[in-house]
Image 1 (cartoon, each protein chain N blue to C red):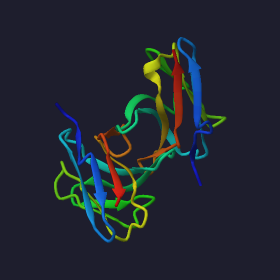
Image 2: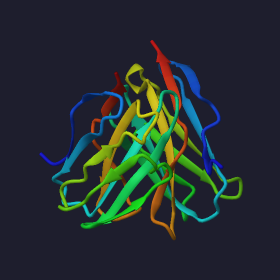
Image 3: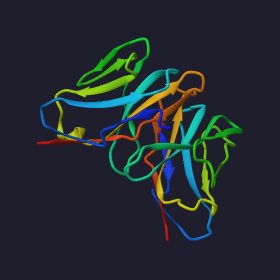
Image 4: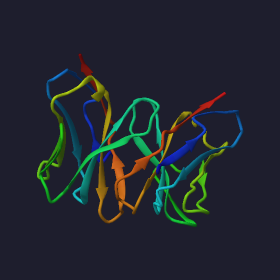
Length: 112
Length: 112
């Protein structure tokens, strides 16, 4: 049973426009959420995180929104750049286990 | 320069052979993890260790073994019992369990 789901396996966006990547979760014990970016044949790198006590966190072009009632978070990238083309994973931590659970990833393609 | 080093980058396994993937970190992190990524899929947890000389099974531990004799090192052995070992293996560490993960660059394991 997947507790963290990224329902869109891929997303294509024009350079300069907004990219919105979505993530849904089922476990109400999750208290901390993270987004990672991964290029082929490389390890994921941390992008941005958000605590469950917040509903928004912003870092430059990247903003993460958390809607706890809907158990949904999203990553907004504005403006999108070709270098943003990668696979994006969302992850969530269950506070009692101190473990991260990852979603299946969304491949973002930003076209010049 | 602090980080996580995985070696080798590419590894080939023959039928019935055990192979060991190396993971070393100089971040002074307590917790270390092994994940497996299959094409088009997310990250699945194989084993994790929150402290030296202690480790726990993750979601897909069958056919794998680990050791944690030193804080810096967390090698993963893929045994002959793992019938489908071809995958991209990622090692990660975190300062404390449940905190942001730092990943190595990965090892691609293939079966001859």
